[in-house]
Image (cartoon, rainbow, N blue to C red; front, side):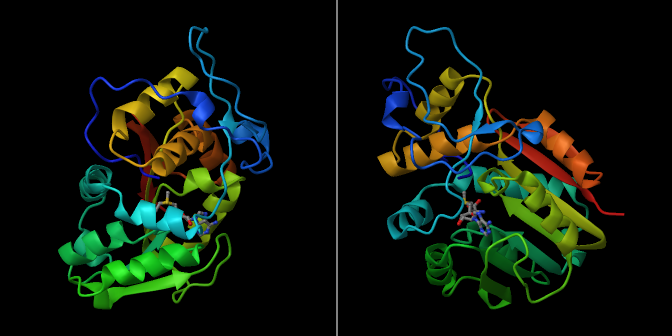
Length: 273
Ligand SMILES: C[S@@+](CC[C@H](N)C(=O)[O-])C[C@H]1O[C@@H](n2cnc3c(N)ncnc32)[C@H](O)[C@@H]1O
């Protein structure tokens, strides 16, 4: 998830890591070098313990549980989505001429709908591997400005077929951390970006310690359901550090920039040669 979107909360008891066991839900580890990964059960809470570094723990890839998709679609992600659109506009010049756009892992479609309302020439193909998410996006798009320029596609990446072979702008928000092997994600970015095309993606970044993970969940998901708080916790643990993403880009032969963004995100952007 992008992050639980509401304002930081005040004095709420810290989350107990035991509430979010990973046993049996994580996927098999991906090759370690580009973000060391494990699927073992998440160890117990850090209460009173020396903080330990967070090892990457993958989470289930698709959000195709109906309740999970509905909870995600109904959650308040206004702040991270607004930030996504602002960062995109500040890092990529003249979005108005980029008409062929693809959004990878679009979820309920908040970001493409937001962009389509702002950019009348933009057309967006938005793909998600979860049928439940595409259903949420279809419902959300009804009657929204620019929805006639949105094509919602159900397909699992990497390799899913899209209406266009290549795009002027490849977008993604909070998808990379879902990939067991991040090289699959970057291979698809390369496949789908036209020569000279732009890439812009934002994802969570893995905090340095389990105490930091808990603090972020407490800070940003006060009013969210336990389901969303659990998903946020797991997503933070499944995400990558900026250093790991830089190594992934080198391995993929992609010359893109990576920067930390705020207290829980990272941004990757640039143009393909
Ligand atoms: C955390 S949500 C982000 C949704 C949206 N981009 C946003 O920022 O609100 C990640 C989405 O990616 C989808 N997803 C995960 N792995 C995928 C894959 N391999 N192919 C296509 N979609 C995938 C999930 O089903 C989920 O809807």
